[in-house]
Image (cartoon, rainbow, N blue to C red; front, side, top):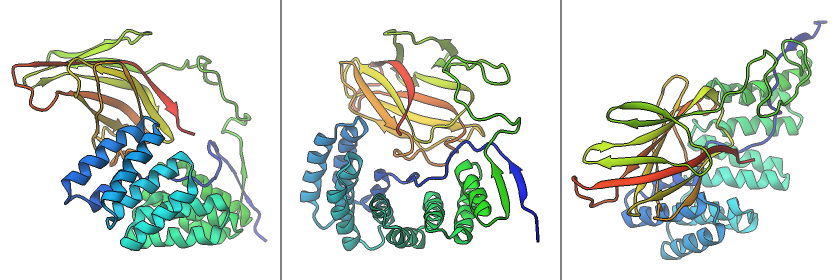
Length: 356
């Protein structure tokens, strides 16, 4: 009889069902041939991103009424209901979306999320299997299948799902922890949830040194202009000024001294424009300096306005969200502004908050 292998690891995360990696925006691929619908959806995202669910529901309900035979229009309204906590209406609309378009992976994905909340794990697997049959790159679908198999006490099946999730996202510690949990249930290993030094886990205060004596460092803010990159401080109500003139566009960047895990996080900040109708081009870079896809933030006015951009929901693709090193805020002037006209916005109170 083989003796269990004792493994000591830094178990930072508890294996649990979570939905990541899909966003309502991905439905845009279904409507790329309808520019009017794209513009309507983009306008509604401003309400959703700032947590104005009642206005978002009203906006997307109008879109769904205008496009009753378009799957993405029904999906978006369902997604807003899902975010607002109305699972009953969300489920109806997701089902309507897949009735119109049986290839709509995103709708099946969130139907699985709703069944998980109900506790019907067999239906969860049915929906997640449908997702991966349509798109084999949805990493969180495989991860959540693994968790579901653990709930059903089928660790031998969970291993395969966690392993493929880890293959798709090698830096995902949740998938690694899932594999170890499954192996432990199969009596192949024993996981002791302590760190490598044998300490029990603890969460230090914001300004407390870690166990190695290193003090936590705040993110560093830099103002980027054609003349160079200058470090600045954003304290209290003091803003950073971004200016655009001709083809010289200012930006500000937030650097993290160590890689920052932005999964389940939002970027919150306040901004106001001089003319109104300016836009911010938001982009992330990871530890490998890979650039994310770009998120365009609209709705800037002449008055101070708070924006909260959920990182995972806004699909910053192509990068490792667990190893983010830099966030860039670039100014895009209003459309139609002459080349010789100056545009300006102010940004303040930039912070990273949890979406849990």
